[in-house]
Length: 155
Image 1 (spheres, rainbow, N blue to C red):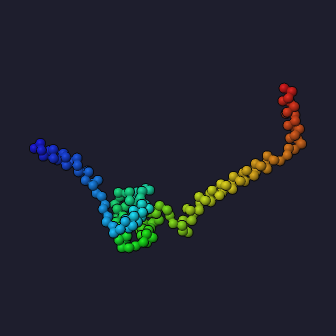
Image 2: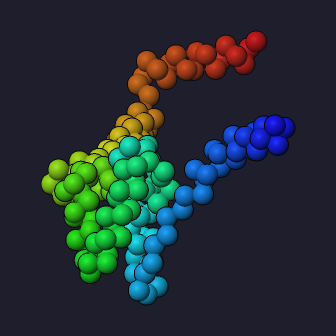
Image 3: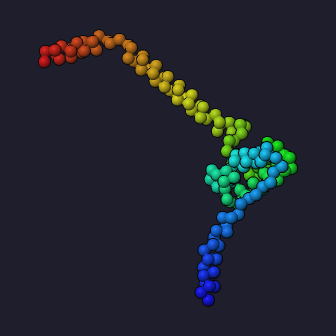
């Protein structure tokens, strides 16, 4: 009886570790295809996980995406064809680097536009300060300055 209890206890303790043993094994014809697979799965974002590539994600949808990438590589599709398929299926969100298209111009152009706008504001502020600091004192301002400096000398 004690032996059965010990076996059940060991089985209960080791049961959760079985989930960690699940490793996807992919066989490739050549190392170039394997590297393409690694590159593609590293550049595609998991739609379920936040900012996690499908090669790192354990979610079921990431596993499905990895399987689709593998199947399409085995079918002889190019990287562009595979990425186009994934974008058509899951949207632009799956790309870490969105493509430069009409609808993404604002995304790509806004940072550069803000930098240029900031530089323009700085240039205008510097010019305005130079103009105000370089102008001559009026007669009234000179008289007031003279009065202040004479008062300081006498004190």
